[in-house]
Image: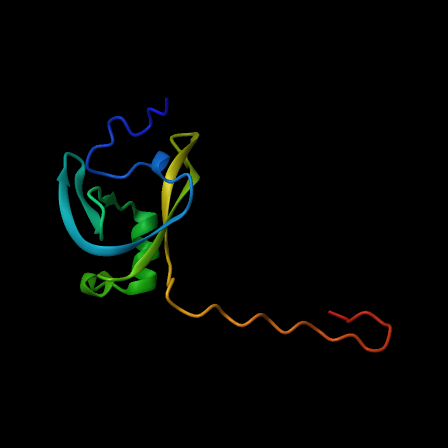
Length: 121
């Protein structure tokens, strides 16, 4: 029996993302904790939120800017990865901007060969 989601609470946990998952940002709110305020993101169709750490916050600011209204409706991919925390490797959630509705990029042009000689790089 998988017990990883037994006490899932209000916020996502890394164990929930065995596969990368693309979600749409629905809202943001500031949440007060004993150690200070944190930003929580809600997603369309999801009851749980994602608490942002500095790394994920900076990824989203770099992609969408400091105006939080510009984040609403944006696609992001959540992935479970490893990070160093207090001297140990632990699971974490990483957020990556993802535009799933765009056409895929054109494949790169590879160097051409001349006669029977291989292409030089």
